[in-house]
Every structure is written in C-alpha cells, then in structure tokens.
Image (cartoon, rainbow over all chains, first blue to last red):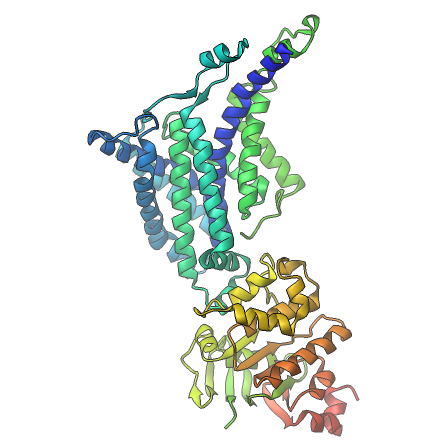
Length: 337
Length: 234
C-alpha cells in the first residue's frame, strides 16, 4: 500500500502537477491562436513572440513596481504587473493590426498570404524584444517559492517520495481557470461576444445583421493580447524567461489548437492539457515508478523512458502529424468560435 | 406610389448588365413574387433593391425615400429585412442566439420580438437552445425568416425561401409567409416554385433577361395561357 502511495506521489510530483501548470500555459496560448483563427481566418505564427512580448512587458512592469518597493509579499510581484503589461501588449496588437493586417484585409488578400505576413510579424517582434530586454535569460519570480515543499510533504505523510507544488504552478492553474472562464462567459453570454461568434460563423450574414467587422477584429486583438500576456508571463514565471524559447513554444501551442479543433475555444483548452500531459508522459523515466509497483524481481534495469526529454518537442510534432492525418478538424471539429 | 419600389433598375457585376430596366414593387400587407427562368436576374434584382449591388441607373425607394446611398445595414434600419438563399443562419449558434443576432442592430428590448417569432414558428421554441446547424432544412428556413423578422421589418425580402425543402414544408412555409403579410408586412420573394408561389401572390412579376415580361396579379398570371406555356410548364 505504501509502495502504491509512493508511486502515486511520484506521478503527481513529476507528471500531474507540472502537467497541469504547463497545460494551462499551452491552453492560454492555444486559446489566443484559436481566437485569431476563428475571426481573422489565419494561423498567427507570431503568437509565440506575442507571448514573449507580454512576458517582457510583465518583467519591465515588475521591475518598475519593485523599484517603488511594491511587492505582493508571498505571491510574485509579477501578478500585479500583468494587467499593465497586458495593456501594453494589447496596444502593440492593435498597432500591428492597424499597420499590417488591416492593410492586407482591405486588399482582401488570401489567408496564405496572411500567414506569411504573420511570420514577418514574428521576426519583427522577436527583434524588438532583443532590442528592449536583450537576449539574456531573466528571472523575475519573487515571493514564496513553494506552496508545498517536498520535505514538508514527506514529513507530513511519512512517504519516501515528496510532492512539491511551486507557487507559480498553483498560480498558473488558478489564473488560467479564471481567465478561461471569463473568455467563455464573454463569448457565450455577452452581446459583443455573441457577435464575434456570429462573425466567425458567417461573415456575410453578420454584415447583414449590422455587425461591425472592425469592432469584432479590435476585440479579438484585445482578448488575444491579454491571453498572450498572461500565458507568456506565467510560462516565464514557472520556468525562467528565455526570449529564445518562445519560438519553439509555438509548436506545442499550435499542436494544442489543432488537436482540439482550430477555431474552437473548448478544443484549444482541452488540446493544451492533452499536449502537455503527452509530452510529460512520453518523456518520464518510469524506473522508480515500476520499482514501487512491481515485485522486486521485476524491477527494470534501464530508465524505462520512452523518449529522452530532449525530444519533448517531437511529441507535439508527432501528435500534430497524427491529428492532421486522421482527423484534421480536431477533436471538437473546429473552424468557428 | 408603392411602399417599396425598384424602378427601371439597370446594373450588374463587372460591367456586364444583368438588370436591363426592370421594375419591381410591393405594398404593405401584399405578397409580391418574382418568377422567371434561370439567369433572368431575379435574385440580382432583389439584391439590388437591398443595396448589395450598385445600380448604374434606376432608383430604389421606400415610402418615397430614396435608398440610393444607403448600405444594406442602413436599409435594415429603414425597415428592410432580407433572407438570403444560402448560408442564411449562424449554424454554430443556437436558435435563440440567431434571433438575438438578427436584432443586433437594435438596442431596445428584444424579448417580446423573440416571443412573437416563437408564436409564429412554434417548432423553434422547442429547439431554442439547439444549434441552428442541427435543424432540418425547413426549420433552418424558419430560423432564417425569424432572424430577419427580429428587426421588425416593414418589408421582408426572401430569396428562394423554399429551395431544397420538401413540398409539405414548402406549403407550411408559404402559410407562415401569408400570416406575416397579414400583419401588414410587405413581402417580396423570388421563387423557383413559380406555380405555388404565384397562387399565394397578390402581385407577380415574370422576369426575362433582366426585364419585366409580364406584370399582373398572381391569379391572372396563372390563368394567362402564354405565361403558363412558357414559364409554368403548361
């Protein structure tokens, strides 16, 4: 029995807790990608850099707050900085939309061109970030590091294995729940949210109904900017802010959106968690886990790891390929919000 | 002067004229039906009257007011309702949300209107929380008409409302359209099912190559030997 609990704790510590946190970050990222896809009908490859931009703004605002001696004591100060950072990111989105995407929308350019344009925006944003904050890593997490320390857990339960929950992990899950609930409430309950869904569903009929496309697009960018900032800031807090990682983060984010059904917000959230857990499940070394649950004589010699952690990103690639081959519309058959 | 009139309309897409001076009009409480062979410009005429196509010549007016400079959305505010032939519902949204979106342009209370639509189309009330995309063809048409009714239009324009529905559903839909007309709304529709449509029409327009060929009451057109032979299949 003790062995079983130890095995369970091991899984909780290395897969469930980090999976929930990472899944939340992916879910927020994928939700942003899906919103842009649903309304503007293109795959926004600049979304990873947008998350990076949001994280950078959060860091700058955190520094500003810290220089005034403001802190949240136990929680990271960054939590206070996120609203201001989101505002800046939203402004950035609106400026990019006005000067770049709107130009192509008026020309009624096809969606493939849009997606190439978004790659241009990706490089521009990445360059801007290097200019402002530099290419170096930034650690901006402060406050209490752990909600639950592994040592305390061991003392509490008397188990061999410890369970640690970082403050940033707990915060990530809570903030994600609140934000996702808000986005769903907005889309399903408010007039403006419904008009976005209507525009996404049937553009011509929405125009006939008097829905203003410019307003719908503006609101889409506001929501996307907020989602990207929160996702980027939480990711940066949880790990460390590395400007270069966001270029790779785009892949699991897109895999999540496509797996769930691109354009479908429920799908994006579900997809985020599935991708996060798959990455962890495929790269976890099960040696210790099997040691606990199998009789001693069956104990494996190797690490019992399906893939080295270096191949983490390959997991989302693999899922992406499988989904596109088997069910390209994703789990929730996307296309509209 | 009729309530809604498109007079001597000339226009088309990309320099090619489809409408060659046709005139279509309808009065309040009346049902006017536009029939004619494929490619005669029936739908185009209706789109021109709703402002979805720029006319090179001719005028469209409601109640004597010229609509020339107004976009379709603005014409909705002037009392026009339009039900397109295809893609006329938001498939991923519920029936009730479809009706709400129909009233998007209004900022007052719409609940009363929704109830009126439910009274007219009782099946929609049962399916109010179901996505419109899951409904049958006939029910979808009801959602589409209901959506257009949400702005309390004075004239309702229907582009082939019975395309692709069974004869039984068609009869039911025509009954509802008569009911709507009886409340004082002007109804203008383009129809492929010419015989049935003319039988409920106060006024019929037979269009050929963008021009009026015959204009008369529905009954008289049905009785007209030439019209029967050429357009109604005997």
